[in-house]
Image (cartoon, rainbow, N blue to C red; front, side, top):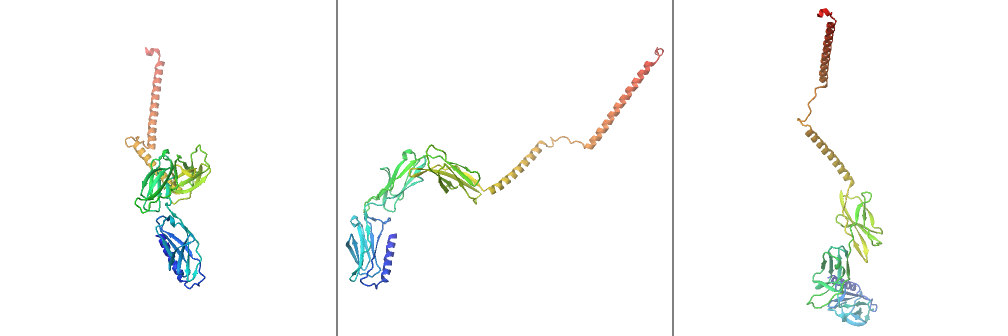
Length: 389
């Protein structure tokens, strides 16, 4: 459809150009422009296909002459267009054109070459997620082409694995291990029953490898605006490392290559109060990169908001602690467990004073009675003996 529109627009353009130069002088015919259009999606010339030839000039012509390999091939009167249908290999060659007006003939156009192919262009092959993967992952090999009415076949080395009429066609290697490693490619051919039976060229080979790269270590690097991603050391000699910083959707935000097994990413403030980061690394194996397992997550929060939250949590903690202490005091010192109330200090002192005075008075009376008893004893002892008789 695209090629047909281009061809029609060119024809219209040449016609308008021709109308504007109807009065061109005989004997001075300008060199025409020779154009080729095809209905092939890759602008190729295939067996069974079509090609449109256009000899565009700015001067009115009585006839347009198409030339193949230096010989006149076809002539059109009053039309600069010529169509070749159902191409075959015999149509291959070098084509050009010229035109005639009256007795004058123009210079021959610059030539263009038509090569009619007997094989389709190779399909596109894609391997996802990577050509070097970890053990246990799933790998998808996808083949596709712009041609229709075709059947795909996928191969490992030269052994066919599966065929399909799907376009694109995906072949899945599940739970991959060492035995799945190798070269994969695909090709296609027209479906059985088609007017023309033709195969494609094989796609580029894709080498799938299995490599276990452990996840890196991710942490703060001195402050909350720097993230360090460090790959574990291996016994291999690695000249360059590729590091990627991934966002919460595990999409790449930053990446770099360094000679060391670690890198510090500088991050900017985010409008989100909380954001998650991951990282991974890769090393080169042959012409491909082998990617590590993705690291653990690193949670980054806005520190202004965090300080506010921290202050609120601290205040809440103090309130809860106070409530606990009050509750504990009330439980330990209930009405039945409270100590007896003491009398007022002044009254206690007064009672103590009266009691002390009574004790002193009692002691003094006891001492007086003791002295009187002693005096009586002495008086009795001093009486004359006759009195006693």
